Amino acid sequence: MAATPNDAVSAAPPKPLHGGPLALLTIAVAFSTFMEVLDMTIVNVAVPHIAGSLGVSPSEGTWTISSYALASAIMQPLTGWLARRFGEVKTFVGSVLMFVVFSMLCGLATSMPMLVIGRLLQGAGSGPMVALSLTLLLSNYPKEKQGIALALWAMTVVVAPIFGPILGGWLTDNFSWPWIFYINLPVGLAAAVVTWGLLRKRETKTYKAPIDMIGLLLLVVGVGALQFMLDNGNDHDWFSSPMILTLGLVALVCLTFLIAWELHAKHPVVDLSLFRQRNFTVGVISLSLGMFAFFGINVVFPLWLQITLGYTATWAGLATAPVGILAFLIAPVLGKNMHRLDLRAVVTFAFLVFAGTAYWFSTFDSSASFSALVVPRFVMGLAIPCFFIPLNQVYLSGLPVDQIASASGLSNFCRTIGSSVSTAIMVTLWQHRGESHHASLTEYVSPGHPAATEFIGQLTHGGLSHTQSLGLIDQLLTREALTLAVNDVFWACAILFVLLIPVLWFAKPPFGSAGGAAGH
Image (cartoon, rainbow, N blue to C red; front, side, top):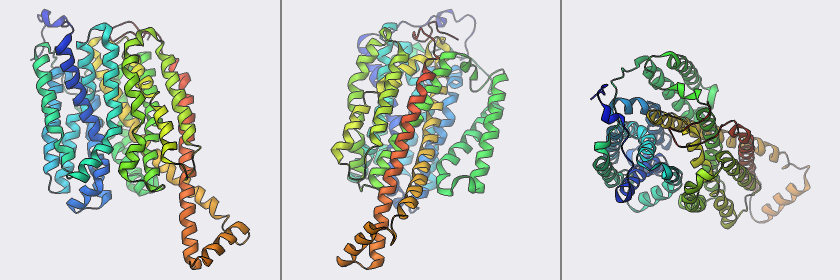
């Protein structure tokens, strides 16, 4: 029901929760967030099994990933409008239940169209969940403990993508692929029941704001075209494909018109006025571009391990996972002490660690051992909480309470788009640099280079034909070329992290929690 001027009682924010109820709410919200973020990556390793089971090609199987990402990306910036219209608690619980119902539909799918529709609707349910989980935690935590709330929330967002591929691989290998969806049922139902039981009497005020249909249409078409272009561009050689070129133009036109329209709309579906706040703008730019570089490393590293070094999906996951250890240990300590620190300095430290470990990765060759690769992943974990937790505090600082849901939704949208763009660009960059290095290395395999001639001679004496020898050399060159290319990607990410440091310092203290003062 819409709020009226007589709602004096509901205008006063409810007192924070304490003790058992606060712990229960934290667990429920953390698990629902973990479940949603997990589902963005858990499907990745199961795609070959899904494709084989449903009788489609692996490339068609990737629709299970892109359809989810597409719907989620569209719904994230709508979070603020939905929360104002229906209330934050109802919107969150409704999103969780919708997510659970369509997770079950995905598990029961008997054809690819049925699975894609299920993933689309599952993604639509997931969109508001992450942003509203942060909003509900902040609005129900005592002011002095909101740093802990941010730390716990950030860790679920960071740890879930790391464990997603490991859990997905284990469930797929030991049970069957539908179980990656069925596990959402107990977690989601428990989270919805606990959240509703604790917060149903603490609902936020609602407003019957009209739907901005033009803005909504531009958002759906623009983000849809952009996401589809990013997911399929690499397979179609990007803008040499008329389809990808058309999608790019549609995305550009729609998103440009969306920005112009939303800035002047009376009831915007996406609140772009938030970017008038200096700290929100600096925080979101730093988060999005930082996520671009961070996600690029996390996408290319396991691909390189599997394609080039011959790791299985499980071992690639195990090589990736140590990044979560230090992050998990440091996050609560940082959350407790954020009010004592200059958050710009904390994020600067994070970017320096990210840059250092990215450079470290750029020095490895194809003979690197598992233990050698694990060490920089372990050290990188030091930077993760120092990156995510303070930046969330920076972009929320100074915002009134009724704008937190919109701010969280919009920042999560930018973070998601940053990750999608990163995946597309980094994988393409890796492949193109691999081709370039392969061409350069091939120049050394000629009669004019004694070492190459000697090596071919040894292979021939070993029983291989001349053609087989050249085939083996080509395999070796490809491995080394892709390793040099991955070094280039890590080097580029290191540079980007360093370039982002000056941007942070445009943020203006104090960085109190939402509702506090902050610079414009």
